[in-house]
Length: 277
Image: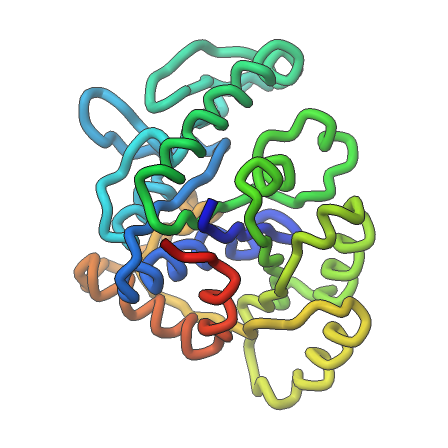
């Protein structure tokens, strides 16, 4: 598959926003690009026609990619419903409600099948696929039956960029710890690091970049400054949206955000990681 996957050291590090920017950047460079998140847990979904729904984050990424949103872009959506259970949506349709334990035990094979089918679909119909992981790829108690991080990178056979959030502190430990806990073959998939939500003078962080690259042997491909009021719905903050009124058109907000990211990212190197059409 021609694509790239964004994974993170934790939840809420900005994976969905980085994917949104990459979707717009690839689209602006003439690629027919699709977002893809194999499994998303969110109470926020958007109707895409014919009674189908996908995660609002993947809907926004499709907008950024300038393509129609399709259920194959988010084949599994889990909507928490309380009492440790979730509604399971598959390819845009509600299937049933079940507990997390029941889901892991009885739904894994079925989920993996629909994910493989959806990956085949987007691979066939798009030049480039921007894949998004969830949470952290090193939740060691869950890796045997995970459906959203390195197993998907293996299925798609794509390089991975690892995103870390410097705003919350501990960025060196989260990067090194994540890489140390990855299996060797999965660590080898990580081709670049992105430091997200940076505040302050980037020149003062250059020593930190040098340390990370020297210690891990993996290049830091971007240090992305924090940007407020971009008016794009973020995956992990949809429940606490800003009260400000959205004034930018869809095209303006996606282009502005993509330009912001690109100006602090080694975009040429990232494009070279993707084989292209």
